[in-house]
Length: 115
Image (tube, rainbow, N blue to C red):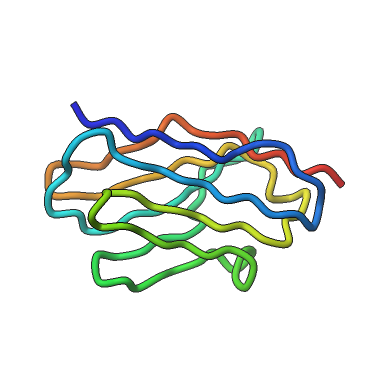
């Protein structure tokens, strides 16, 4: 069974940086897209950034210019470089992989930005 393992979350001061990583424990064939979502307390889960199999990227307006998503097709991995972090970026971040076989989610990693 495929599992997505996330790492890289933590506590950082405003203006700092973090890099999130997510790798699939098993093989996933025919991936359409990979992405990162986040959910703040009391709010809905929203898309932060996504990247297609062709490398096209999409970002939430709130993170444009600060976050960069990348992927490794060989490793079935997706990364999120987060710079100039703000307190409003505080949330649980989830990675997501969309493939022919289904929609996969990571367990979530906490990112806390102190002001």
